[in-house]
Image (tube, rainbow, N blue to C red; front, side, top):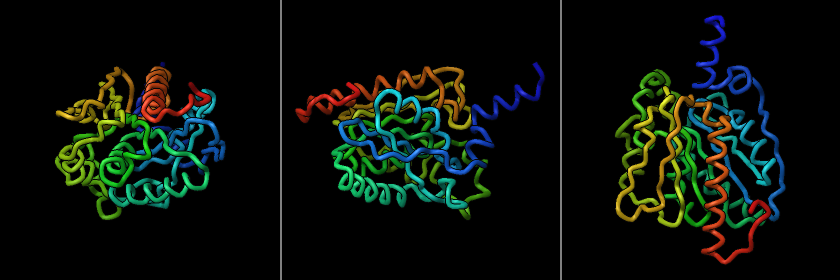
Length: 257
């Protein structure tokens, strides 16, 4: 095995494919098949595009879920560099509009990296607790990531400082209680070089019984979005969140149950 391909694979697993994620046009398939299905929203991370979700989207659709992702804008209108709070407020309005248009009551959310922070902010501070059945985060810096300092030269055009430990956003999320009725799962990897595993571990306090952690090994930061073992955990947690929601609301089982 040559050194070149090995290095490329390591970089791809941490940062994603340059060609597919960063250079290619939007590859996400848009559908409106929400009726009778569990709806999953995918939120990509800082300086990535929603193309990172291509594999997971295919797997979720194959397993009967309806999937959507948001074009959150940012640098060059696609790289998710806007402030977390601004995105959470926008996300709240977007979901309300989609719910009214397509008739769904609540959704699941999967957030990769910064996408998980945006989802938490929406759920904890902008009314998402009544719209979200469960949140799964992949490599999300729940306590901030010191590696964000590498991107600090972009601070003038990006919300890099929010991703650092002890930032205002990070402190607010960990200060305020997460809704007990919304299952929150952090899937993190000891092989993640972008978001160290300690930064992704949830540390629930009294009243935060819905929080849990799943540790995996040898999986890169971006690889968390396409690894088959991670997907098996994601699928199981989606089913469990659906079961809990149906028990609480008395709803009939969906097509994915």
